[in-house]
Image (cartoon, rainbow, N blue to C red; front, side):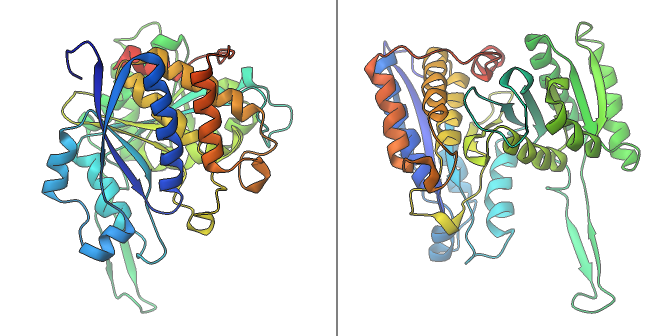
Length: 377
């Protein structure tokens, strides 16, 4: 950010594939509305990346792109993936490289049931579902190497590594403790330490050691399979959950289903030491089957943009976007597809219009991850 009278934030925009461009366009319309109301300016740099770019150029993550992105304060990301590119090429060759290169150590995913939103869990109310999952983002099974011998035969053997370091685990665990301390709740470690003994022991011992620095934060432990039972049945049991990369990827999709669907779920990929930009994205994929139809719900992307602004210190704008998005979301008869009654672009315009109208919008009840990001940045 510059030191001039108008606060300026340099944002790189990667629209990506499938529905990525649609949800990003909607979120940028909301961002522009917030600029006009709250007096900051976002300088946007469009970055070409994704399936089409890869097929045309053969480029994934390059040193030149890394240098270009490093000059920005944050990254807004749509989605990446297309059936014309083999699985793993874009995911490992771009997304994981970005997280590693910029040490985006924490994937922060709120699981919050907003008022008026339909959930598949019968009887669940918003006051019972308001938690945050802190997922380790640069290690685990997603960065380990693998190999296969005797491929294509009945004797094929595949080996896939999982990498866990004390440094990588500790920085995420400490962030989770800081978050739990701020929210006044329990920190729950989610793992499978009775089977994954070595990795589980490292995670548990790290939590035990770090807990001494946070004596007011209660600590709990839940096996990942048990958490998949408790999360939909008694989500009020959890406030802050910290877990490894693979488990976090899985349980946050379960959390998204509970809170109304992938289209309403937001996330932040946080660099914790200022050495690189953080990245913000809805947790859904590129959904190529519905691309171009206007059926994608952009609320997750809009809320991710709000999280970006909170991370950059624009807390009032972030809270206002959150309130406006949730107000619009609560009016929808469905949270995805043609049943929403609005197209992707129309939803962006509705939220932007609500921001600029000055109409009073109720604050979102309960905890706000926007306040958390602003306080912990």
